[in-house]
Image 1 (cartoon, rainbow, N blue to C red):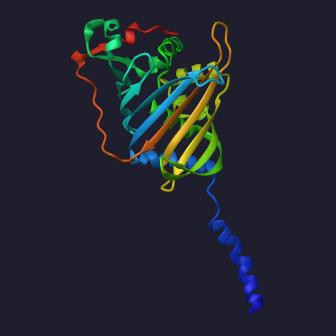
Image 2 (image 1 turned 45 degrees about the horizontal axis):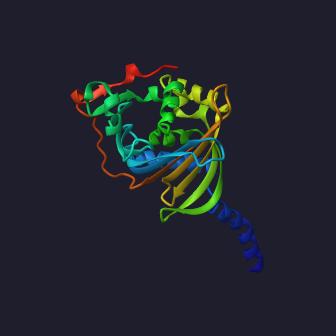
Image 3 (image 1 turned 45 degrees about the vertical axis):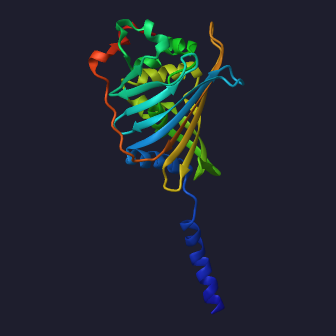
Length: 267
């Protein structure tokens, strides 16, 4: 009987260990991205800081709802120097901004909304001009989508996010492995980002809850010194909640929108 017990222990012990093994961290993060897209929608809050490395940077914050599958968002963004919150919609690849009173005189036509294609906001000239207003554009959809390019990850350990139990993972996103890199329309923005930061590998932290859903992602990129431009560090954080809630995002009426796309600088 003792011998039988030893045999069973030797045979079943490894099987039990295999059954309780921790999931592969890369698979866990990618699986969480897929599961979150499977829920289609979520409520988000996000923030970004941009400034010289080692400084607090200039904050931009926001919150709202996103349609991950449809590529839509309805958010309120708070940018220094503009005062209060500004409503920002993302519909079919176009950003619609409810013109703040402080900028009303700068928008031709006097309409309450201004629009610009999202891909134009990633150009160096536009991003630089927005930094002058105290921040750079934050698209929570792009931050989540980039996690599909995770190529390395390790489990840091359990950490709560807003009271929800999660597992914290630290990893690396290969920008060339993201869906944006495979999309001809979005690839130029990826190439510009790589040129600016000098690498295609970006550190990322991800928090996944017990249901396998994304709860938070944080990315930090640093652009080194360039002629005429000092080094800058940008940290972007996106927190998700209420996965699967009803979300409908529609563009403002055309007669209420000024198209600024043609007026923005290129390059």
